[in-house]
View (spheres, rainbow, N blue to C red):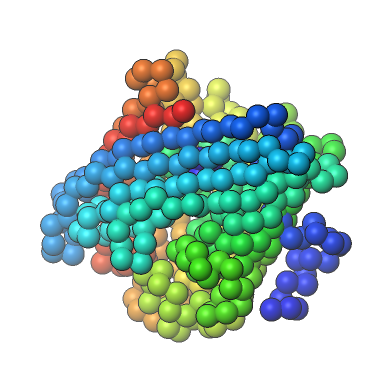
Length: 373
């Protein structure tokens, strides 16, 4: 991104009071002295080379997306508002068939499958102790599992495998709280507790905890940063109903229990560039993505940046239909065009999208133009 009871006990012990109400990967903030506004607009084009999957022709597609964040200083803290939007992806386009190909498409699509611009986050953040506390409507991906190499589909990798760890059942647009703080000696922590509504944002449901199949998402991430290495280790739990959750995967054999998992996110420097290693484990009895590992590397060449990554998501053995592990690889070159305008050339290879064994592997070439302000 650019900018039931006992089940949560093991996360919350040792976090008295409000500390467990909020996540924090964003770090402590100082209250802004004046309003701020930042944003980015991108346009993407993608084509599957060979253009036929499963016997049907796959259309090339062009999409656009926008992300705007506004900060307003209030009472020693800041009210933060974020809007996101995207165009409507074609029904037989690259991202509709190969869903992992473009993480910037579909986040803000409505129930009618049409693009729109929506309020994505609206929360108040205030300094508390050595960190900051935020309460409101939030997207927890801004707090957890972040790094400098592979976390931003607007400027880095387009592939979904290299934006967030797919084994973490992250809710979208949920009401809750997050807390982040520095503990000294390079140590920090982030804690999150929000309503969990499912794989796509449903704004009315965001304020209806534990109703209509909703649940609670909680996470705790411990962070350490040294001169050449950063390590984030986390644990999470999601108590929403996981059967029939609309994620495109036939998971009728999976249980209806709480999803939970562990993850790691390590980053460092090597050879003049930056590398990142992500690993993840989730309970295979509850959700389809059971294990994950990826490696990414980015290196500047003059004003240009080159990035490469490869990742594998291992499917749960309890899936009802035939399945195969998803493998994704990507390489991009991003270079400046004019002032705050960049152009990125992108190439991906995707095999077994949504764990479909019939999708044996396809190359996707693409381009992205972005303007930040």
